[in-house]
Structures are given as structure tokens and as C-alpha cells.
Length: 83
Image (cartoon, rainbow, N blue to C red):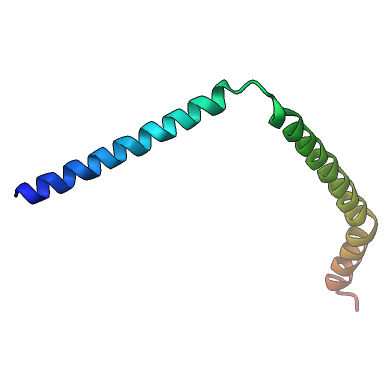
């Protein structure tokens, strides 16, 4: 029983040390006032928005001019019972 208690105590101490190290690391990141990542993140978001808008516009043009007329024509042919 003593061995189980000592094993649990050592694991709890190890977990406590890991959590304290993580807390120190988080505090260092949060108190950092360099601001290096803000510009990088803003540029990445801006690029993603622009590329997404271009992709959406391209898909909208493709579906509006190429896919939809062909699709409606095929549906009309499929339901044309006159022969």
C-alpha cells in the first residue's frame, strides 16, 4: 500500500511541476509586448479572405455560365415526354 501511495505522490508532484512550467510559459507569452505575431496573423487572414473571395467569384461565374444552362437543358431533355 505504501508503494502505491508513493507512486501516486510522485506522479502528482511531476504533474504539478509540469503545470507550473506551463503556467510560467503562458505568463511569458501573455506578458510579451513585442507584437511580432499580430502583423503576421493579420496578413495571413487578409490573404485568406482575398483568396476565398476570388475562389467564390470564380465558382459563381462557372456555375452561372457553364453548369446551370447545361443542367437545365439536360433536365428539360430528361422530362421531355413528347419524344
